[in-house]
Amino acid sequence: MDDTCKVYDCKDAPVFHKNISKTYSSDDTPMHVQYDRGNYVDGVHSFDSVTFGGVSLKSQTFILVNQSQGNFEVKSIFGLSSKVLAESGTPPFYTAVAEKVVDKPILTIFLEKNVDDTFGGEITLGDYDTKNCGPIYTTTKSVGTDWLINVTGASFDGVQIAWKGSFALIDTRTPFVILPFNISDIYDKINQTVELTPKHDYHYAIYNLNCAHADKIPDLAITIDGFDHIIRGYQLAIPNEDSKGTCFLALVHVPEYTNLGDPFIRDRCVSQNIKTMEVSFAGRK
Image 1 (spheres, rainbow, N blue to C red):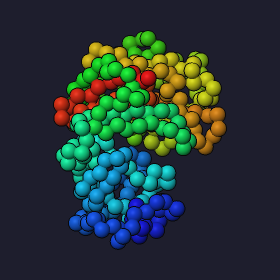
Image 2 (cartoon, one colour):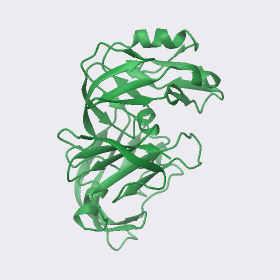
Image 3 (cartoon, rainbow, N blue to C red):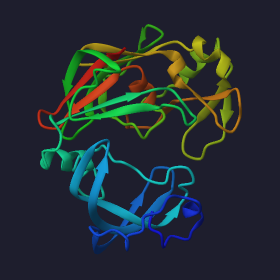
């Protein structure tokens, strides 16, 4: 966020002092990004040298935010998407590959399950993660852009779901698994062993549950290229920071949209090769 930002979102947030940077520049192109839940940012298209995780980039494009609405917790985003989807320009990892400052065109994601300030995971730039992840057990081709794959089926509690599949986005910014078909039967099945209570949310139909009962949620399987990727049921229970002991069920329905968010990623390591367009899956150590 720019040091000129004076709105509530910018209060007590780390800010960028562009006048101090000797390498900052901007073409003054106004930028606007609208997010799914109605929050948005305004800023200008900017450039600067950037260092992260021991990787230094000579010139990285980004949006320097000067207006923000509804972004109370997240003050900045390190984009992992492809150039096709990125709104600010070339994403940092693409820049790193182009500037040849990483060994391989491979990005690996490992997530833990935390809602506090403890270790939440690691992003490995330029290789597979051999510290947190085991051997790769299967791969698939991304479709048209990074992280977009072809899902061919699903099952819940061992019962196949009548669904022919769709394209799906593997997405670290989404705390849900989003499915395009009616999942009321899945809710009913969960409610047999775990009491679900509706939670008001203007965007999704959300349910709360007692976190202590998370291990009673049946497993969900997502089929990709004939391989069943198991999402253990307890991964679908996300602690609610506003209510101790209460979780929300991170499984929602949106017509004609499939998103394999954090609950899917937490049960495995996921890698994207931006040159071969291969997405690889490995078990956690």
